[in-house]
Amino acid sequence: MLALLVLALTLITVLGTRELSQREEDRMVPGGPGTVEAPERLRSLSEAGDARFLSVITYRPDGQTGASYMVGAGTPEFERLARVCASAKPVAGVSDESFENLIIFAFGQGDTLDLPYSAEHNLIMLNDQAYQPAADLAPLIVDLELKFS
Image (tube, rainbow, N blue to C red; front, top):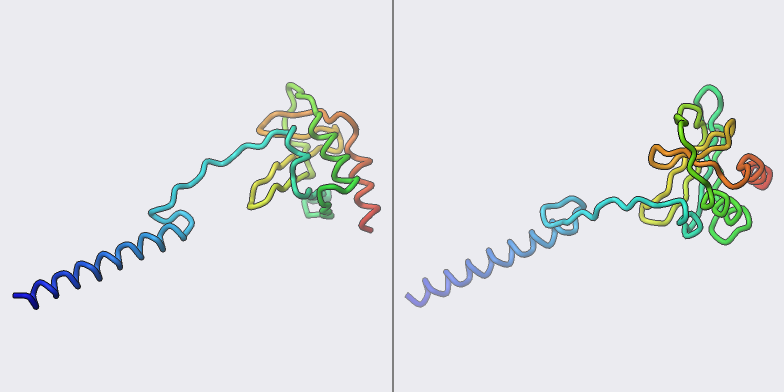
């Protein structure tokens, strides 16, 4: 009888430990059964200066990537682009069909502020809303091109 009781307690302990171990593994897997996904955080233009770095991606008329530039926070180029984007004002009645470039402010761990940019109209888009930057972005992007060419 004692042997049966010891066997039962051993089985309960082993199975309980295995179940606990499996739950811990599930929590480590993104999207696993024990994981609680955080809601996506929407960034605002005013937060552009808080990013760790920014990337500018330009596209050629045929749709192929033309060039890509990346600058870190604290550089003069970053500060100018962040300031101009952060102070942009909303513009009504603009579609995003002519937005051929992309400015990305990266905050870390996949958290970004993606701004399609139209050089032709000097506009950026955020969440289906067009914004007029406080100054022309084209010369600032040309500065990046010159710095890295």
